[in-house]
Length: 277
Image (cartoon, rainbow, N blue to C red):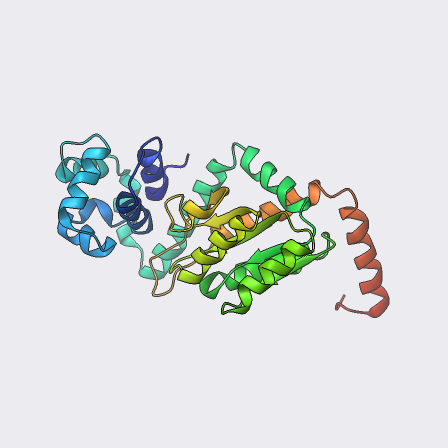
């Protein structure tokens, strides 16, 4: 586990059985990890969309006497480097926050078992549906583009609406056993509904989300978190993108003909003059 603000919060929440309301508070805290030590219980309640007493009960559920004790713990655990970051402008701070997110991801990957399990699930699904809507659509599209070079049948689901469940049904009929979802804030309601539908249809759902406390967690069989940056007007998602590439690698390792497919593509690309040398 890294020493980033989000990483310290994740470590704090691990091992606790949280109610849906408490998971919502935890999710909000992870997203605003850098600000949380300075927020009042009222401010945190407003950000999470819950009542102030819910924040107090959440702190108690974590083993603290109340929210002030939780906030003091978070302040005391802040490294000195966090204070030094105030000397950077907002653009630099956004980059530094993404570096922390990547360090957190690196710490998470010290245990490769979840990624290796995901690789087996994705490689074994023929076809492989890849879901990502709105903010996560670019993550899904990027994964699907590269995955199609080593996997025989990848189906991108990057548009919502009434056709989404039809396309999930079609994938199941064709033999799909797993679905990969990229889910980033703000989370569209139809993504949650699509995952619930996919699991009911018999698919094993592998999800990349910004936090283990994201709304999609309850509808995922295997969720691997990769934090997003929140310092700019629009979230930054370097860690989820890199995690997607890691999953590609793990999946390719499970496909015996992956290297042959890549070599075949390179040969055809050269013969067509596809790329500028």
